Amino acid sequence: MLRQQGAVPAPSMEPEARSLFWSGLEKRPERDRELEILWDVPLASCTTFGIGGPARCLARPLTMDAVADVLRRVREVEVPFWVLGGGSNVLAPDEPLDGVVLQLSRSCSEIRIRGAGERGCVEVRAGAGLRLSRLIRFGLENGLSGLEPLVGIPGTVGGAAVMNAGTRDGCLADVLLWLDCLDEKGARQRLGLRDLRPGYRTMGLADGWCVVEACLGLRPATRGGMRDRLRETMLKRKATQPLRWPSAGSVYKNPPEAPAGWLIERAGLKGHAVGGAAVSEKHANWIINRGGATAADVRAVMTHVEKSVLEAFGVCLQREILIL
Ligand SMILES: Cc1cc2nc3c(=O)[nH]c(=O)nc-3n(C[C@H](O)[C@H](O)[C@H](O)COP(=O)(O)OP(=O)(O)OC[C@H]3O[C@@H](n4cnc5c(N)ncnc54)[C@H](O)[C@@H]3O)c2cc1C
Image 1 (cartoon, rainbow, N blue to C red):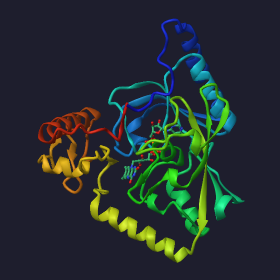
Image 2 (tube, rainbow, N blue to C red; image 1 turned 45 degrees about the vertical axis):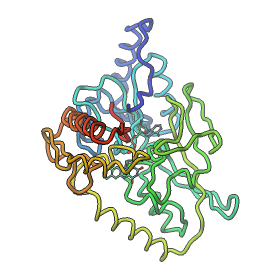
Image 3 (spheres, rainbow, N blue to C red; image 1 turned 90 degrees about the horizontal axis):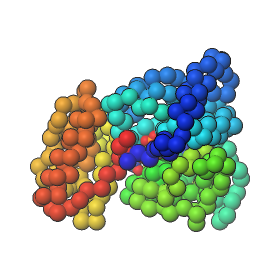
Image 4 (cartoon, rainbow, N blue to C red; image 1 turned 120 degrees about the vertical axis):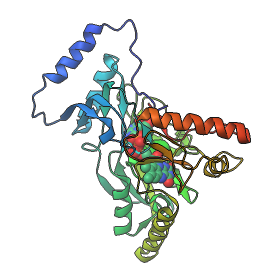
């Protein structure tokens, strides 16, 4: 499940309070310097799958205070809300989404070097709304190594932190020193690695917390060596992944028995399609949008894959992508 970060509206909550909230947002001055609001935005344009119906409200705060204010207000009136990064690990629904989708790309996108930290590391602080690719490029430009295994992973620093994005060669938790988050009361909290529970595609962050900044410990390295490692990883990706098509990357976590892609391929499912969605011929753990796929198409392909792998191998595949 994509974590719905807002509470499900309680029956006790006055519908009047919620309609006041919506009309308050609609009546805001158009040139609000703190908050950009877009109405009825197709989520297909905000996700790498290119799938998803309209979100009633897309909120892009321009300052940290505005982020905290939006979070406080949606919680107060119990309007459902979701924090969305680059939308590269989610499947959004075809139906309209009646709530607030919050994006941090305009408020939390700074990178700062904070000098030497422990054990020869250089502390680099990155806003959660920053593109991960931008942060990796910053590392290369400044000869700071540690993020090379993550090259080619789309999305934001916030999404990578929540998902503990990575590959066999390393994950974000390997270089993470701490995360700054807004908790469910909107208060800023700093969580060190010891406060988190990093694991396979999870950082163990509590539901409802919003990451605003990550601090990483990177090591000085030669730019030539880093460039070679980045190039090698990208070549490997291009050779093995269907990057020409819209997707959300690997759909399933690799179970202990065998890689998910191997199980799906051996179950004879490469190319299995419903509507515009299909199991990739190049990498069986990827579902691609071959054009005009709907969320219902993707879900139907997933249901078939999960049933077939269970029948063939007795393995219950765990989803890596988050379904709204
Ligand atoms: C071509 C391709 C290749 C990929 N390769 C890899 C890979 O090699 N390894 C890998 O791990 N993943 C991979 N992925 C999946 C995906 O890119 C990663 O999981 C990525 O880190 C998600 O970041 P995002 O910003 O897009 O998050 P989103 O998809 O927008 O969100 C993911 C989750 O994080 C939450 N979230 C996002 N930002 C915040 C925030 N600031 N605070 C709180 N919650 C937040 C969302 O609510 C959601 O629950 C790939 C995807 C694609 C399309």
